[in-house]
Image (cartoon, rainbow over all chains, first blue to last red; front, top):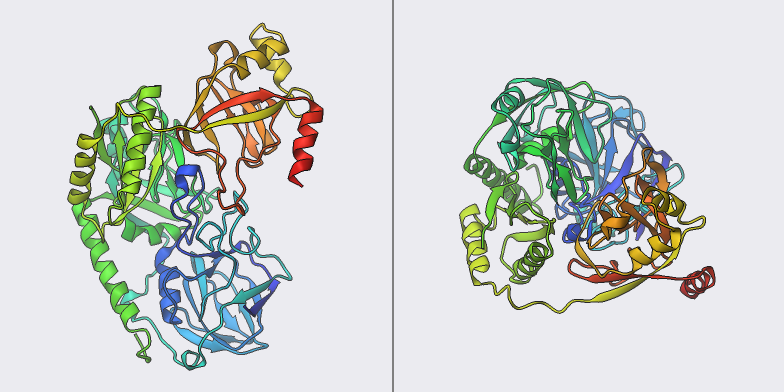
Length: 321
Length: 228
């Protein structure tokens, strides 16, 4: 256990996250984990970690951290203008910070959530198989809560030979975050609870992200999606990217802080490869929907997993990715 | 057995066993969930139970949708629903009324009963844990006596203490963690339902039978003190 950061300013919402707490949803526990799995996994790969190592998830306004030990780090996801001391540092690329350096974020540019990975991974106690912070149950991460001023963050030890290698992600794998996003979805499981007009409205309209959005869900506002006979269903299991439409006809995209069950109709689900786009949506961004088939969604997912495999395999060879 | 399967995004499916809440459907859901989980199907990550549903999370990179569907169909075809599983019975001690059960009088008044009658009707039945959800360890229970069914509060509370026992319409339940809520709170249990540092963090599992037992303030304090 090595002290790696001292929190000078915590930022808007900074939490420790990994890929989630799996296997306890049937007991009502939220899965938690990084909202943007892509940025989280890439950050880890860039510093030579397993992709489920714990990172810091940073929201909109970044923290100011004092570096307590020289270490390789990488920052991915939202561009919040990261600086080390008085110089800007790149995103999607690993670099070394030295003891005494100040890592800060100088202002919002694009996206919503950034991830800070450190070589070796953050070292917090595992709770029920995961290091993720669950803000509702107040478990996991750093004492089950968001970071506050004065916290000391710990990391696992690393082999010194890994420290100096710098890696960057090829440009074509770096996502760009725009204010208008096209999100691909699969209809169901309750698409039959909506009128044909309701489905048509959903697929052809533009929706705006509201300011009540958080780790639990991204709330959208726009033309009302019409139900046949109401929005209530018997409570059933929820899933990442579920698009719930309650009685008011306004969709909510469920993210990693979601509850395990829900009692409202779900018109569809965001396909996995588009979840990182949803994770980076911020208030006033606009969303339009495109319907795809399950086979298309899986083809895209297989392609992405192959890229992750290639990236993982190149760990230890050094140089660029 | 009649069931339908629907896709829920590209990494889960939901199996529907009708749309009626019943003890029998709940047993089917529990039995099949246990089998699906314990079969160790590669690529099946977890299951979530509902009143009449099983959601299955899977990794499409490890199991194809068609293999998953065929495997699940085979399991459902093979299952012997006549054979019932062993069930745990758990007694939940409850201090009814007073400060920790502020809505007991309300529930009595709205149902034209005395507070003692509400307690009696609440403690008589065996309740089945249909499934857990909403918050960690929160049980959705079947078996509430209709005579004490009471609508939710018009103004939900911002904070309901962990351990609060409540009624909402035809359901009764226990808040495992302190959270906002609109249920009529009739009492409080000193027994924790969720303890993340314990080897068995959840007191209840789907399929368990629970009973409520009224306790006095002295007994309540004794249980609290014994936990320290």
